[in-house]
Image (cartoon, rainbow, N blue to C red):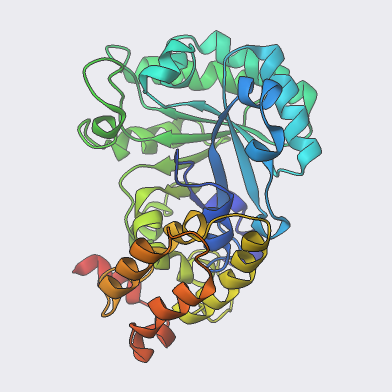
Length: 344
């Protein structure tokens, strides 16, 4: 399949609170041009009543980028969808999967899976306010509402409101008794449920999320899924993104090296430093760039210990780079390397 036929949802990086901020996305974009990037979840209240520039600002280089919203009120979600279009986002996504207590207290996130009619009204209102794609990210179930029949009723109801893309975390969520972290690890992954969902709704775009750690694993699931969303793996080992344009989107491109990624990111970092942003706020997203490689410890230690100091600048990054072997800095993923990593 040629690159022209690979839609953005083929591969994406999940919205992750405290992680996928604008600095993280700017860094990830130095590694992959085609991967769809998501913001952290932003509540409707934060957008409507808070510092809009802080919550919504992003660099044009981040495209394609989607805004994930947290909320349940159709009017508020519609207004935020309109604002998202004004700010230049490429997609608006409704969070129906986060199980945290804070989200539950606001009556949104994963608890919305219990009220598909509410989600449908929200989607309908959002679609009426924007021409952007409106998508939904959800679990395969919550608490005792974990039957396949309930899942299909949720998807069918929301699809009838006009949603065409469903990003499905292949785990159920327990809204009480498990922390958000535990809800990402303890409920078993059930890819077969998501696969059956795609078979039963072939007209919908179904994106698999949960437990995908390598491009090889993503390639395997793309045999049946319309797309794969990767989460913590892309943050903890971001260099896995470097071969995505070639291996998943079919582009005839040379994957960037780690050195090239850092050099490209430093232009962004310099501009942010000039605006008063502290160094560590940008560079914390790069700590995993050399995961498993010689020099990784020096890289992380230097940035962690010196990057927080007042006035820290690009010299700290240069010092961190000096402890990484040239062979590691300039290496590029070979074709088939992701399969080899999976085998190990």
